Length: 200
Length: 364
Image 1 (cartoon, rainbow over the protein chains, first blue to last red):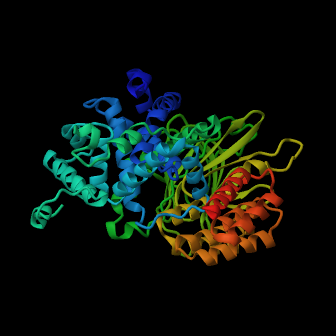
Image 2: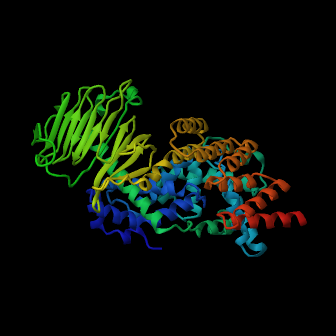
Image 3: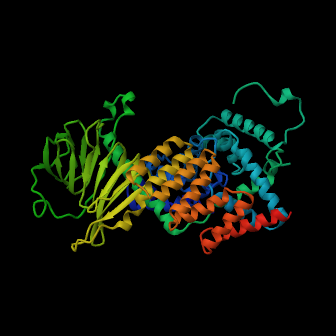
């Protein structure tokens, strides 16, 4: 995977930040695929709102570029924008999912495109995992995905989400606990140990 | 078990690996170019709006509580190769050579800006910022109307209350400020001028010239109208087509956000103003029902669309949607009807697969 920092030279970033439209176009072309893939994974493979969020993220990259201080790598900075776009989107979205009358056929096709029972089982397990993740509060879900899917460290996640290390650890703890419960993999422990006192 | 395998014993190593390998669906180059172009235009519009605020226009003077009621409009109009003012354009009555404090425009003014941008103020305290070498005619009165000859103007419009909307017009279109943020760009495309309106927030009403077709644009939407050629060809209706779909885009967005009531109100308004096709609006009504989990009502609406608008693309969509919402023999019947009517339709393969599935399920 080519990273955006390799595709967008510093000089182009600077010209884009100064309002040069050609440079801005080059920046968007450079980050486009990275942004799309990042959003898609953060959305757990739900493509329904991908285009809207892609446009929002690209717009944010452009409008925030003058404030990019190069304290973080450009890729990290863009990832942070994607995370915020998805978090805002998930917060706006009501619990009740939008019913897409044409989604069923696509999902059916996806399932049937798999080969054999193994593939069907893998998709079932993925669906279960995604549903469990979608049941988490937005921040817990984001921390969990950044850790478990992207393999980021707690420090990196804290930086990406602009939050304290302790907050990040706590969110990950609660996310894992909720996931265990949702997936039915809770260890056999006394009930009182499964419900520690304290908020999220 | 390692953390990466199952994330602390959750037993979801395989699904997590699937999530790591997720790749977004393929998209065509045109779609990609459109998203990039939209982002560039929207960023330009936001920069124009921000430049007004940075210049100290309005924002600090607006109490926080009143901010929600403020009809804020940022309009950027470009006309880059019109005839020089004084040659074929209107004679400049007000020539501005220096950027300085905002100058009152009075009731009427014909303005030609010199080498530096300039700022003006209307009688209701609305502000206008004009780029260098901009020329426009302003007429106050019951409604404020700008006719842009060339260049770029950005406006910050005070609430219109019961007054008619502020109007910015070019040769190609008229844009009505109804309380929103949007950008208008006029530039030459090939041999003719084209004016593009991009909406940042809210709704904008655009009236094409000539023809007078009214279009409502929503956030993220854009419409381009080309000028008539010297032979007075009709306006490029094909170019205006995306705007007709604009209201449906915003309604679908509202449905996605769960704002069903707002979506229904927008549907009613669009029906009143004929801002979209009747069949499409009927489909949106069905989608609103679906969002409220009124599946039977949605199905009835879809079937009504099939009957009332049989030769539209919405009829095909609706027939397939009705089949998707049906179970058992009714579902099979509708899928068969779909395939009989649209053997090469958009959902023909899906319908065949669904039928095969139902057959398999029935034989188990």
